[in-house]
View 1 (cartoon, rainbow, N blue to C red):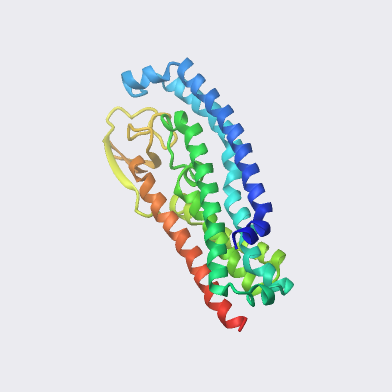
View 2: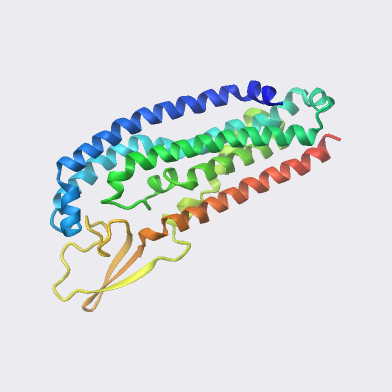
Length: 296
């Protein structure tokens, strides 16, 4: 079964390896460049001395310079989980049913349950390794930028934690189900990708009107006008670079700051990742149940 699974999915494995190699080259190049600039600009000493208050101009220049550069990696990676999962998932059952090879595969000494379980474990394990490698590379090269900006921005949030791998497994699970239902691999890939796009949990959590858990609120005294305090200021109104400020409004002599604390990064990762895994697991469970009903 291991050999058969490898033969059937070696193209996807080669594609994953190629993507990791390309991301690794870009991540190492950008990460070393970013670390050199971070040190040459004197930002470590400034952060240690004043928390960034005395070098906001340098921080603004650093963030502006490298935010654009990091988009070259992070933006394409946003579509990779859906694209790769939608290609891999339908091939697991859809190709067997479309070509009629399931009659031979399930009439051998290997029962269909063991056949499906083995393939699911091997392919899922490969996707987990791929997702963990990509997230590790993104987290490494983003480390200097994370010291003076927030990790809760959508591109960093999706690619630099658990969400990337969970999103990939969700797309894979949806692909397994669509392949079984449609019995057409190309059509199943298209439907799986569209379905994955609909399950946009990170966008709902971070950029939509709904935040889970809800944003925190801070009231700051502001008798002198609080110059420079805004949602997009270099040093956030909360005084902590990791916070994502959503809005800043004035109420009398106070500023009311609505923000997502930096400490919620992993909380949101587990919530969004758990929702992705729930959808993916439900799709696979439904496919397993339908498999025994539709092919008996």
